[in-house]
Amino acid sequence: MTDVEAAARRFIADVWNAGREESAYDLVAEDCPGLGGTGPEAALAWHRDRRASFPDLRYKIVELVAGGDRVAVHWRAAGTQAGQFGPVPPTGRVVSYSGASFLRFDETGRIVDVWSVNELFQVLQQLGVEMLPPLGGLNATGE
Image (cartoon, rainbow, N blue to C red; front, side, top):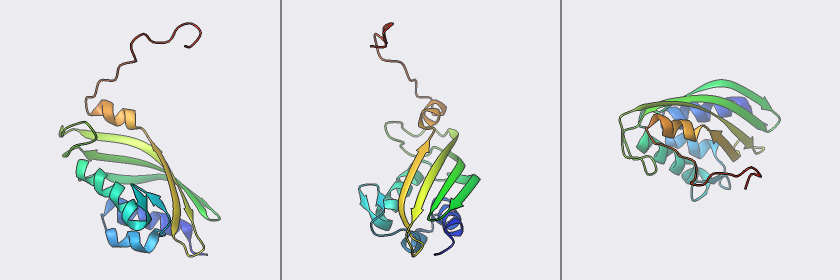
């Protein structure tokens, strides 16, 4: 078994931060789900999309826990919106947000699964998107 902690750190340093796409081919298994497909290309599709919106986006590892074939990473990210982000046109604003990613590795040390959560609403607020509750709201019974 490879050192999954070192592999996770390399994935964040090389693919997320440095844009070294060739590293994804070393680190991501062919059956790992990603944006619109599986494998390294699908994993890269998500990162290319994010970098198109925030070209200077950088991730910092806050805490990393590894055990067996799994790694949990609490991270912090910051970047300037220079491209379209979903429906939001470029604003030139800097965003800063946190998230967590959970990676599972196969016996060769390649990532076979990635699950992430992040503060998307915080990002949208920092970009100036106004979020309003639905019209009518909830009544006393929660309906």
